[in-house]
Length: 125
Length: 106
Image 1 (tube, rainbow over the protein chains, first blue to last red):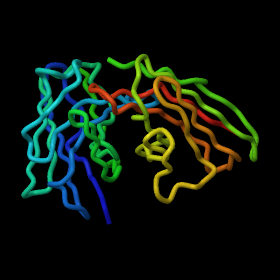
Image 2 (image 1 turned 60 degrees about the horizontal axis):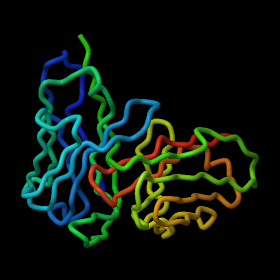
Image 3 (image 1 turned 90 degrees about the vertical axis):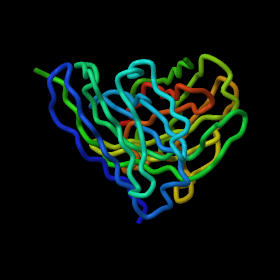
Image 4 (image 1 turned 180 degrees about the vertical axis):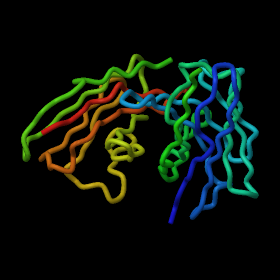
């Protein structure tokens, strides 16, 4: 079964750090671009970051640039999100996902669309 | 950033009704648009990609159309299990962006 399972969420004080993990199974993880997407409960979806198959190309949303760092360990089928200098506005459910289509330069690459169940991050004193 | 304006914010319809949701992009995104369904407490699930391609396993009552900046999502005959929030999503440009969502109720 194709599956993504996030872990590492929890409550942290403003200015603190947290590390999220996403364990992939049931597919060849190293062949897929991966994303982090977050959602305040009851609100919309917000893209956070993207990493390519070998980790050589990474993009971030402006809201997290310089504070968050995404990486991957293809040998362990794991995606990571290091979150530093956390703010109250970072409070959300964080999903890892591989999306059906990736646009790279002017080319489109199609794969599968799979999301984890999400892990809640609460930034509060 | 490309803004995705989705409407309506919510709608109420009867079982069997045709439901239509629109999504407008702030700039041309070709057909790089997908539609997701999200039920409470669950992750989003892909229904449509490339504006009109039905994801494998998704019932044919779901459909999508459009290109450029204006897109439409339809449920041809609303079923009780379709109660959810629906999001459009553009993948033409980074940062990837999503519409604000449409909550569909019966």
